[in-house]
Picture 1: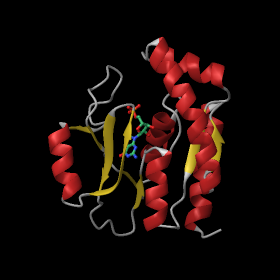
Picture 2: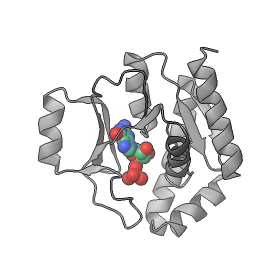
Picture 3: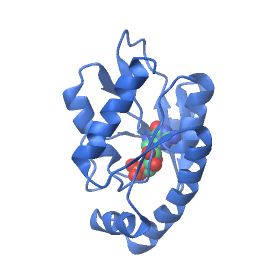
Length: 175
Ligand code: 5GP
């Protein structure tokens, strides 16, 4: 699952995880600082040196740098019949698709740029950072489309959750 911060990825992910026992959230490593609105276990917060040790040991399924910080998905342990939910950016999604071509890739988006900007500022990004993220979102949206991501517009949260759930069900059924 990808999409700009502020589009509601995290909220949708939480709703899915609460209602679907087959889903497990992959916890990423990041070198960025903890933000006030981060839930306690949002990330494993590490130094760049710690990140690099794991990276050079082949310990990430995918990784990327975003606005000056590294983010990576630890190589998952054997998960039986559980499905792993990754909240990552589109460059990471590209790496996952290279290794796992059947992965379901979803781009959770805000209805438009004004709404995205409003949500980013409301959650504590400064104006300049919000502008950077709006521009980055436009680039990612285009890349996601190229990669065959399914776009889910989060205008109404309940509707978006149902839409994502339906896409997961269809992927599990091999539709
Ligand atoms: P934030 O700093 O807002 O939590 O996340 C910034 C961006 O990094 C988001 O687009 C988020 O999806 C992405 N991200 C978070 N974890 C990972 C990861 O493990 N790998 C990659 N490639 N991107 C990640």
